Amino acid sequence: MNKLSPSILAADFWQLGEQISRVQEAGAHYLHIDVMDGMFVPSISFGMPVISSIRMWTDLFLDVHLMVEKPERYVEAFAACGADLINFHVEATEDVDGTIGKIRSLGKKVGITVKPSTPAKAVEPYLDKVDLVLVMTVEPGFGGQKILSSCVEKVSAVRKMILEKGLNVEVEVDGGITIGNVRSVIEAGASVIVAGSAVFKGEIDGNVKELLRRIGEAEESAGCGAE
Ligand code: DX5
Ligand code: ZN
Image (cartoon, rainbow, N blue to C red; front, side, top):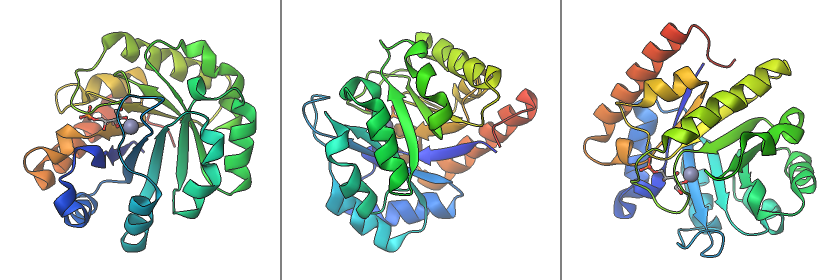
């Protein structure tokens, strides 16, 4: 089954708890949490205390996207504050294998992430060790950007490698996903859909329901969707 992972980067932080309850009630499966350090990406977002508070009040699956230099330094801290899945960028560390191992040893799901300029083959050596590959469909760092079509082709390439190896790995897309283009990324092979602006700008409940409807339609027509 394909999943929707609303990105709280686009939420109104004054009303964060209420807005998270709304996406949960409307049927979102995951919650996408963007951590930015001002080094790996130019901007700074939020970190552990915010995630701990969210964890206290919701049982939603917390999909944490670390846009952080040397993520291995923070894996324990993010596991302790309640992440269910820890995504880190392969470009941000010299020790991808060690970082995967560290996340696993803490009993958390592992995601590896690639920026638009990183080729699909960069994730190939790790596919049998991870739960998910996050293919950025915009340059990481800011919400509200337009999807890059070259990255949609990369989604197909990653999905093809996973199928050829007979693995059960999710492919997540993040950046510029809208009601209008969600079908194309699912047809390319995405199974976890991040949406920030498309969920939190406007009427949250209606946005989530419409995205879920489109995801369901695309899943039916593609006749697959990861387990
Ligand atoms: C960008 C973040 C995204 C962002 C997506 O660096 O990783 O998760 O919140 O926002 P939209 O859906 O508005 O492009
Ligand atoms: Zn993200």
